[in-house]
Image (cartoon, rainbow, N blue to C red; front, side, top):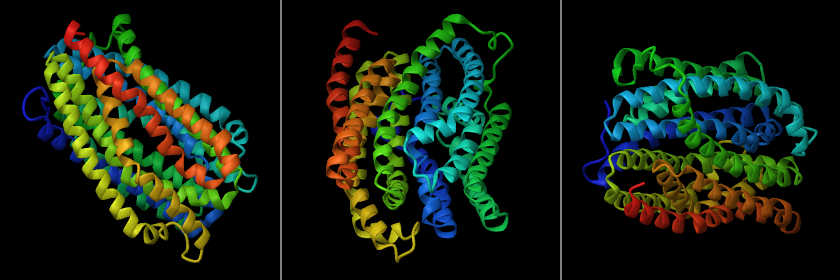
Length: 445
């Protein structure tokens, strides 16, 4: 069930690893879209705006958690590539301790500070109560986020990208059923959508755990492996925390942008929410490519096969460019009908604004592909602190868009904010990678 990515065609390996992840991410986005469709269709555009207004705050907190989980898996993938199984299992044991501690800390802090953060973001008064009900449940479920994503990251670190997808697909269908139950049958409103998401993620995490226990002995840890070790925790935090911070730094820019969008009114918030759901659905392929590049970089660094890194990068960019072109064509031709999944066809202003946002972002997908491929390859190689700089560039770009451009130029500036951020990140990442690869080839680290 493991997959060695240190030999064979980079293109073939990356594609085989990426395709299951794409399907998994598509299903994850699918049930996220179903949340939005059910909320928008059955609870109305105001409830849709309430859920959408929490998106950047959700990204800030859960983005850090997901980055932390992915970062913890990088030393595991490096030791697997080096065939040092004893050290690999100690990293797994210490990952468990760090993840448990982080989940408790983040849950307590975010639940306590949830409403003040929404107020600081200028969430419109007519939607703030529903926004709070939704996001506080999501934050209360942070332990389930860690439960699934740490285990999924460890499986992917060893080359198994298929198994986490299977459990995610099952959870997706469960989430859809619970959405219908908790919104249409048991009228819990937007809170029902959040409860459905948390409960489904809990079950997928439990399923992953049972699979590892019964079928994946490579990840079984002994009592000695579980002993906290300062040097292992230091290495895990040295990789994981920068990856988490990179996501959160990026999210700070998104929060600044969301604050400006919120000031444009709930109708604009609803349009951006609908557009972002579709954008996220198509962009999930880039997240899959990023995970593939992280595992590819980690294993090949561990095996000291530095000559395979740039061919892998080149293969990733070819795949990303082809996909970007296909996504743009589909969104251009079918974007408006897809938007009506979220809002009634009579809401022409929301549909027009959402379509404009979506097309502008899709036209710049190649820049997003480069961000994910370059950044995660760099992180997989062990240079996660370098990636923080790219996050700072994205934060700066979205911050400028939110604080300066949106107040002056209005909604059109919000549409260009993401592409602006991607280009700014690429300006740093591309030369950074070639600097790192020269250093690695010269010094071997």
